Length: 85
Length: 537
Image (cartoon, rainbow over all chains, first blue to last red; front, side, top):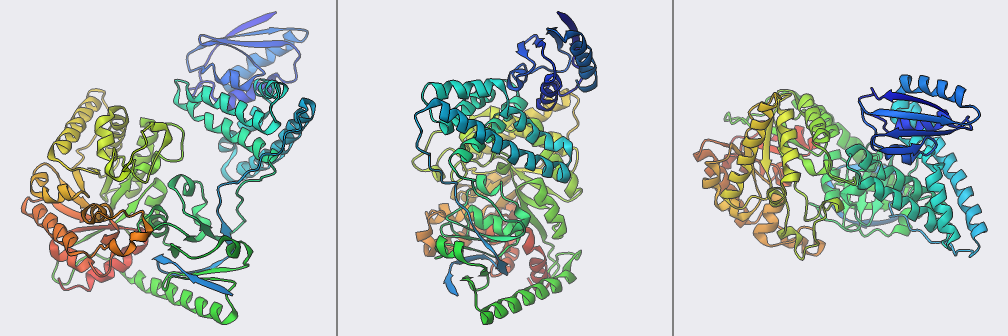
């Protein structure tokens, strides 16, 4: 299992668009990917669950990746978060 | 050729294809009773929805850019959301038909979002409803209400503000409604857009649907379905004549509105949203005499936030620059209802909780609006006025709240300007008390539509009362003269922002009474200026 933390810098927080992009970004991987915010946790493949986190700027997210392709997925996701959130 | 009549609400001639507006009528297909069949139906409907949304997304991307198209993209992703799909599947397995399962599961999610403590996420409930409604419509074999490309004449029973707000206003050549009156919402919108329109038209929808060309003569109040060649030629000639007359008015663009005896009149426009302010400038308005705030509140699921309102007011302030803008605070209730305010149904909405009454009893509605107005005041020349005032204490209470709000903003370090506070005179009580109100107000603006309705006790929504709704009634004109005199005696200005402000038969009389501002549909400004400049009063 891989895990990393990320603090949201986007002033709008994780609104619908980046949440949608995240759903698309994790689609190619088979690992289980969970996003945990202070408000709860959500499967990264579930758009509405991600939106329901209402993750705002300054919140710390914990991303856990568990499965066969976790190395690659975690690296990719770190890049995704710094680029989009 | 078939023809008929209606009550014209704006002059001009429109010729083009007709579209009949209908609230989508859906027939629920008979459920198969077999979950596997229903599930397959749902899946194929999702594919159709995906194709539709993809097409909309591509179009939006090309027209408004990827950033704005993202909202459509989000709906595309919601289609595949495992929680949504699981919810629908479970509902189908417990016996529901695909269409209802899709709709109801969407509604469940929409409600979860609507209840969230975050403005942005709250607003997303509309996206979820939109997405599930689309699947439902596909399963019911209804593509909904569709509009042709290009311009058209819109035929409807009647149109509510929440319906017209979703229409492409720049493509509508005319409204033809079977109900309504000269002061109903559709008529006001027709005047704002300067398009010839008929209300109370005796047109039947089958005629409108089957005709190739529909024509409306807003001068005579006649409609023609498939006009013959002779009629068409006559209408086209009229159309050209009207265009020529409009061109002739261009001579008055940029001129001062002043009578021959030297009385200056400010000719302003009535607007509903920031886009209208651009039309007002194009029409050479000298200000905005009435910004109807309620359109910022319609067509949505929750109260607009202070920031939403601020952005809209700021936009108007910036567009109008130095020209004065009068913002009327929320006048919801009566014929304009919004579900999310949770207001009780009333026996007599026109005499009910509306206008300033709602604002004074619900500070959580009023305060953000006042804060937004004061924040926007730094960007232009804003004035505020309160609707439905009947007593001096109401004005005092609202003024006290204004002072409090401005104070708070100053403490927060947010710049504000002095915002003159006026009263919209639309109850007979306010008219009679004009001398007392004038001591507390910076200006008056007469809302003639409601003042007529309340003075004559005639419901303006009731088409059958047409002949009794008499804006030239001597009782009304006596009140108007009293209002203007009270304003002038107390050193404040008085204007008119109801439909009568543009009435060619009364404008001169109003100036004579002492009104110094007339606010109207933008399209009437230049002709009014011609009238003012040619007047001797």
